[in-house]
Length: 151
Length: 171
Image (cartoon, rainbow over all chains, first blue to last red):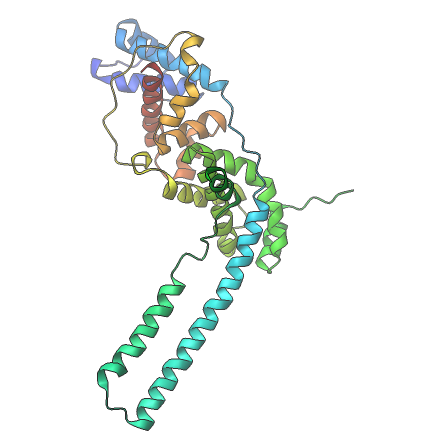
C-alpha cells in the first residue's frame, strides 16, 4: 500500500529516492516514489539526474597521497617535548625573578612604585606571550618543498 | 615472522611514553587520513599539514581515548577539526544556505568528466559528506553518529550536497 503524497512533498520524495539509491531505509517506499514521479516531471528529472550522479560517484576513487607522515610527526613530537621542557624552565625562571624582585623590594625598601609595578608585569607578559606562541609552528616538509619550488 | 602490533597495544605503549609505538598508528591510518584531509581541505599541502597536526593532537590526547572503541573514528574528529581550521572561509560549514535551483539532469558519461573538479568546488562540509558516503561507504547512521548530527540532517545535507554537485557539473 502506498502513502498519499502531496505535491508539496517533492523534497521528501527526492530524499526518499536518494535513500533508496544509497540502500538506506526511508519513510516513503519505492512504490510511493514511483507513484509520485509518474505525475511530477520536475521530480522525475531531478531523480534521474541524481541517479546518474550516484552511478558516477560509485566509480570515483580517492585521490591518494603517497606521503609518509611519520618523519615529520616524529620530529614535531620531539619538538613538542623539548618545548614543554623549555616552557617549564621559563616558568621556574620567571618565578625566581619575581621572588627575587619582591625580596629586593622588601629588603631595600625601593622608593619607585611605578617601576616596581611595571617590571614584574612586563616579565609576566613576555613569558606568557612566548609560551602561548604556536609550539607546533614548524613547517612541514610539504610546505618547505612548495616554498623551495617557488624560489 | 614479523609481529603485527595491535592498535590497543600501540596506544598503551604511547601512554607509557614510548613515542616510537605511535609509528604503528601513523602508518596504519595515514593514507586514509590523507585522503579524508584532501577531501576536506581541497589541496595536498593543507591535507598533509592537517593530518600531521591531527596525529600530534591524537598523541597528546591518547589518555582520553576509550580503548573499547576503534581508533580511526575518534581520530577523525581531531582530523576534521584541523582541516576545518585550514579551509577557506567560504568553504567552512555554515548555517543552511538556500539551495541552488536544480540543474538539468545529467545523463551521459560525457557530462561527468568534470566530477572531480566539481567535487573540489563544493564547500568542505558538503565534500566531506559525499566522500564519506560514496568513497568510504559510511551509512547514514554512521555519519550521524560520527559527525554528531541527526540522521534526518544527514539525509537532507547529503541531498543538498548532491544537488549542488550536480548543478556545479552542469554549470
